[in-house]
Image (cartoon, rainbow, N blue to C red; front, side, top):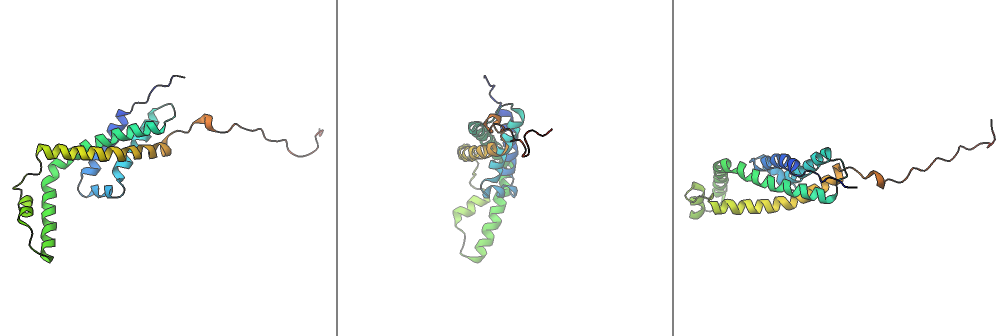
Length: 177
């Protein structure tokens, strides 16, 4: 029985884009604090899309592959979404530090310079390093989400069900007409 391999990239691209946008938005990204909710949910959504377009039964390996691809796509989209939002994030960090400094000691000069923008945190090296670490983390979590998605949305093997047993005849006289 030669079964065609499922197409992993399209479901991973769709679900990874959704998970990446949700992970990159400032307030909504807090959902990832809850067991990496957006990445696990995105990988499970990719498995659901994969199961919808696949004729055969999905294995845990299929879920792991589509989950890993979803994590990589989500990391790239997350990084791209965060680029224009970085000044907003710096202003938010500035307000938080200012509030904390009201209750305590003076803020260090290096932190003050960083928050004022004198040191640019978005150099190509930091950008690629952040992308690498996000991709590594999102891939591992995506694999777990893909395996969970197969257990939730994957079709069950119809041959694995027990064979149908004929029902016994109803009780009563055997020669009744």
